[in-house]
Amino acid sequence: MDEPDRWRNMASAPRDGSRILVTVRPTEQGPAEVDMAYWSRADQHGEEGWRSSDSQPGRVVEYAEPELKCWMPLPTAGRGSMPSPWEGEDAALLDGSGI
Image 1 (tube, rainbow, N blue to C red):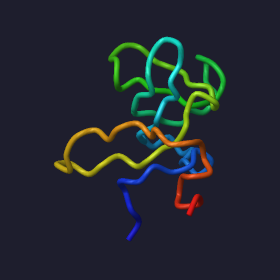
Image 2 (image 1 turned 180 degrees about the vertical axis):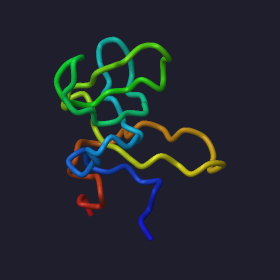
Image 3 (image 1 turned 90 degrees about the vertical axis):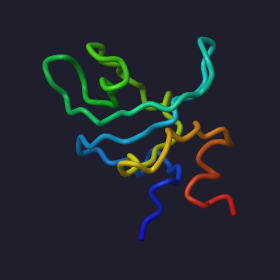
Image 4 (image 1 turned 120 degrees about the horizontal axis):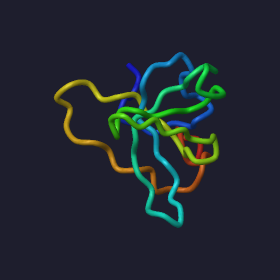
């Protein structure tokens, strides 16, 4: 069975519109954080890309590829709290590839 509570490389993130958790990279405006995002196909509002509209109702946030560090599937109901953002180095350590 796949490990749902594990951060994965963004290259493997589903681009079918399903919602996932992502680690948003730290910036000058604040530390790394976890958000719920989905891949959106191009529409009248803009180009295709990663978007989030669940964390702040009424506001759609668009993320550029470099802003997102890694992803994991949404936890199943009742599994606990939101995971901490991935604080490790970039992709080389995700998916066990740094071992």
